[in-house]
Image (cartoon, rainbow over all chains, first blue to last red; front, side, top):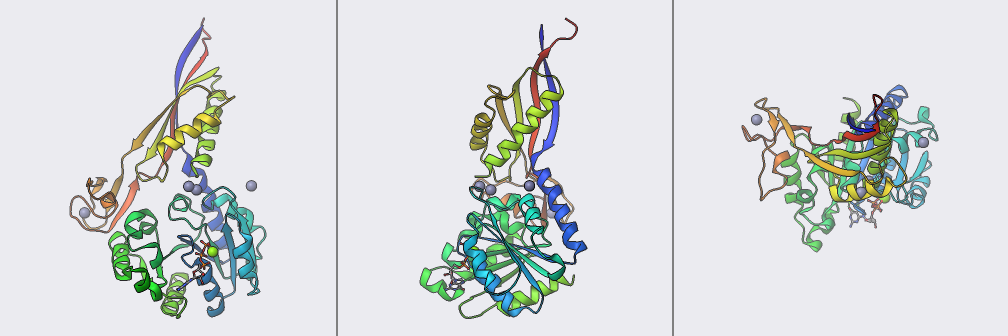
Length: 217
Length: 126
Ligand SMILES: Nc1nc2c(ncn2[C@@H]2O[C@H](COP(=O)(O)OP(=O)(O)OP(=O)(O)O)[C@@H](O)[C@H]2O)c(=O)[nH]1
Ligand SMILES: [Mg+2]
Ligand SMILES: [Zn+2]
Ligand SMILES: [Zn+2]
Ligand SMILES: [Zn+2]
Ligand SMILES: [Zn+2]
């Protein structure tokens, strides 16, 4: 004889990642490393921004470069003589806390005060996966079009800092950077929103100022 | 495509619980997805199906239910279902349905739960 039984499970699959993220954050806190998850669209300027920050911020910086194939971006950071670990996500469209935990083993955390984790260029998937970073910095650019924020609201809802980059070419691509700014503010009134151009250097000082502010909070 | 890694975790969870309950087969699994989780239910269902081959879950009916979005308003302390607007799909996370203020926090709607399974097992009393 066979019988049918119903078994309650109520197990949140997302929870596993959240637990690992908490563990990562404990490791960062213990080593006194302030960590920034850098997310954003493909080609929006994530790597360029981190390169600029390495040159301009007077803290000891480290980088985890996550990408489908990470050696391209990781190679760019190595020029600056800072500790860099590349994380290949392969087919996956996002970093998760488990991958980051692996990278931590290869980083000299004692020599790092400020760690940037460059996430995979994608405005959707990384949103669901907390890495354990202290803040989330989202980088988008005018070349994605000025309806980007409306199309991908959730990533902005979670952000601490939002960079609207490449304002130098806003006119050329016919995008209104002020509309993008307002769209983010409407979704997330608490976010620090900064318009920047890494070509002209506009906004860079304000970005640095705000990262430091978060570090000292 | 992180439906694949989520599907993998779902299959493992369901099979694990089924084994612990001495199931011979899983007949049905119910998955709950938050209205804001960035997962496509159809893709997820498809991948759970593919990954369940040669496991206790093979052939089971895969049900997907949506968890409604809930928010908490920091202005008026409203806590409950988010607002909705057919023309504006992101309105639910923009403003409070009570006072229309924009300082709201999402408290529900981002989950991906394995809710329950129906299993077939040997009847010990028989
Ligand atoms: N005009 C202009 N170009 C920029 C700006 N910032 C970055 N770029 C250029 O945009 C291109 C992409 O920049 P990256 O820094 O590689 O962008 P990314 O977000 O790291 O790209 P992925 O990692 O591939 O997603 C490069 O050619 C940069 O030189 C800017 O403010 N203005
Ligand atoms: Mg890059
Ligand atoms: Zn591992
Ligand atoms: Zn994806
Ligand atoms: Zn993904
Ligand atoms: Zn309210």
